[in-house]
Image (cartoon, rainbow, N blue to C red; front, side, top):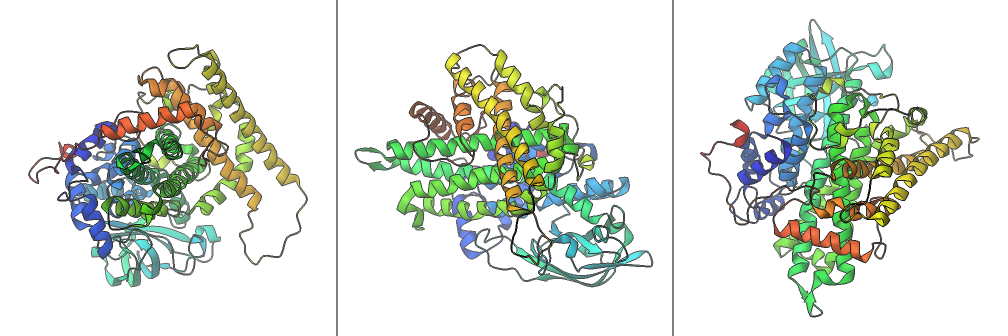
Length: 600
């Protein structure tokens, strides 16, 4: 199935989340969240659909044909219950077997996943080191053809309830720090000797039903074939895997963002204030319009990144960080704006509409700290600014249609091709001159008149000027004399000014992605809303694409955005640039005896 068909099939399988009796209803999600209980029934439901199969590439016998499938399926689950989405999406860590494993390991682990025999957890972080993985104390001591594992990993998702553990352990001290750690994929049932125990879970602000806990190894002996990759390759493998998983995190943000906007828009449309629907108050209408626009831009960034994983896999050392940061920012800013728009009802927990909004607000906030927090991702980008700036000076003459045209076939997904250092290459930024030239050749058509084309051309040229100026500022920062600053005891010395440049780079990336999606799909996504480009003009006009203020949006564009949002809401479709159906109102989940589409 393609990505849209897969999402619609899972929607039908799960039924309407407004039906309380469904396994993944809003009522059930809230009930379990209050009890801080793992949503076992919901997890079982998506496993019965075959969700785990989409974490195994088709060339290993799985269901993953392209990563957009995973994006869309994750959106379906996250819009209902992030506890389920986050608990079961730990399957993504098996991606490390496809990256670092040999042929025998890949085949063996693929078979185990497809049989439903894996609940993995990622055990990188340690209580005393956080994101500083190079400083970890966990040891994996080589001993007569096996390894003895000792230490504690915390906090991690599914630490207690996992069947398998992906971990980093020090295998040697007489080597550079970056080569001391190796990666292991450990089946807890196959421990030869010693002990593995769960570390008690901790209460959390959001994801109250998730098993956020830890795992401890006490002289646990494992066979040598538990190691992925070569000794000392652990940190490199971990970074390669994170570039993929950070990109896939965007589906979690899109799912929570959909439910928050849908909840607020539905409530305000039904609420009468000042002799009319509250949603028609100009302040409210513009707030909803801006929130909808942010979701569209976030989707464009996410879709382009998913396609890039197939087409430009070696260039993801920057891309994966950028997409995670910017999509999370778009949704996080919007969620806070929607809370203000909801007003006093945001603080009331008695009614279900408020409860699910609050739950999504809490749960969605975790994306910015998952798989490397926002500062960690931005720091990674700053380390590559010099290479990006150098690459920016070397134009690339390529056909970019496969990256942006949503109809274009994608090559087989090869996660092992992901590189820690992409030498400053980024296909999205490299495509900008071509996009500007393509836009210059367009002629007025439909709602996209000459005035709109002129505005879009101005906006696209501004994008290029801003990108040029950003790299000029980077060069100036590097040449500037060392600034007097208070002494720091930290070895992490990245300048906040460079982090600011990384932030701006992320925002520009999302704008270029939206421009590319519009230019390459306007002739076949036949809705007038998409093709006339008013939404794109509004997105390009934002100073920082994730931020907006009331009064900045053109009234006619605001009305167009609200009308499109309401049309998709009333027709039970995802908030998206293309039509993707959600479950029918009142639909019950599929009968337990039905065969799931993923298995057919």
